[in-house]
Image 1 (cartoon, rainbow, N blue to C red):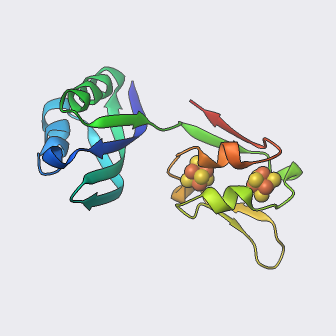
Image 2 (image 1 turned 90 degrees about the horizontal axis):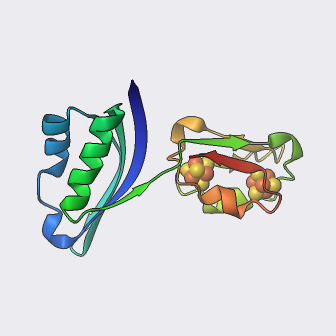
Image 3 (image 1 turned 90 degrees about the vertical axis):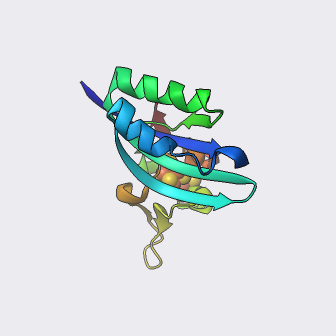
Length: 135
Ligand code: SF4
Ligand code: SF4
């Protein structure tokens, strides 16, 4: 069965120019979607969505770790209880992708699922624990 996993990869300087993404596609037959990438001389960061059979995803992640690339798994889904939301904006403040926003006119919380990178930062930010994750 095909699965999707989102991960954050952190590349040390000596791994930035290696063709690891190419190897993930070619050797592990994974479909990749690069959601974000940031590279500087000290470090490379990438938010990546991998799609493929679960055993291939596991093998691909093992390959990355063997390459000394740090792999952090992101959550699978976010669930928001908007009915009890008090529009405090705490979750909006930590949402770097802009998926969460407050409507200027109604002050209601908007969630744009397409922009969500499933980092999970909003979960701990909500003082009412209205945001849950599926791991
Ligand atoms: S999981 Fe991350 S990207 Fe998604 S809504 Fe929460 S803070 Fe924003
Ligand atoms: S942190 Fe919680 S209460 Fe505040 S706006 Fe976000 S979901 Fe609503």
